[in-house]
Length: 421
Image 1 (cartoon, rainbow, N blue to C red):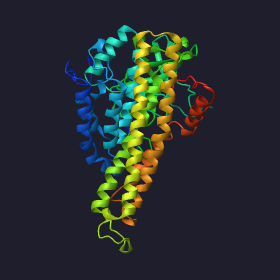
Image 2: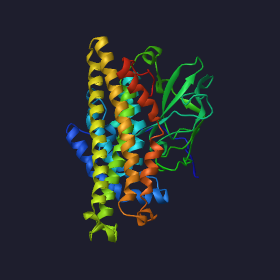
Image 3: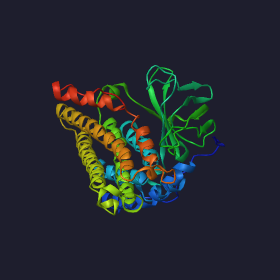
């Protein structure tokens, strides 16, 4: 596949656009409405993009221009600072249109939150300005070869020529759409840190080599960092103290991941209804002349709809618990109460993941029961729904979520403290 090697380019002075994509009038209502307005446009060519492997560059431009990428910029930095319940609605709308587009934004919003939690005031001023002007920040974290999935060998080293980044990331979701990359690495003391660098910087080599069976268009390929210059002000540390302390960001990130499954389930519902009305033919022994009058077809559509909407409701409940945790984190509530609210957010998110994963996978299977063998024709490309759901649900194995939830209800054992739960 194509190799994307960038020439040396100076940092952009502000961001992706030379104008801000959000204003004083940008709020939850306007941004949620904008996302819902994009659903049909994203869906119109989602199947074609999947079949021909066309990366959704234009779709991401629509998302930027709508101000969606700046949704979580804090109000103190002139951002909308949407609640997670509102952001969840936005992500569901985008995922219903094209789950690839929505997944690109998960490392972006994770990076925005990491910046808020770990960045210094100078970094806030610099990167929030870029976000307000349409920047997308991609994550580059996962590597191959370690004993555990979180192991990494990418290093930030001190040389006579300054800081240099060396290593290779196997997963860099959204990297080819990004303005900046947030790269997780270790320094020479073994501390975990992130560097926020322009993707055009010399030594950054991006490969369009993601070949998963689903979510084919997330640009989740590998990235090499060949002695890449890193400025001191681009380094963001994860303090050891913060790593040992539970915070809201992992639950928020996993909650956003479940929006992908909800969007897929809702998209399947739409496709199943259309197929029942226009593509499916009833069996002669069904006693009806239209597929939509077949009790069996009605049962299938009801099954898909009930589970898709139940997943949506469960997900929005989890998002509400995350909002409580975020509010508590920044309002200075008593430590014991804060811990309880952070745990509640993690448990609610784990429950949502269980329900959402099941809803998406089941819906994507049931669509074939609506109308027989012709539903499997490649021109329909209905299999992309299952491929996308099955691929994305491997991101965080759901069996671990069952265990976490079960232990909590049995003996109040809190979820483990990690960067990813």
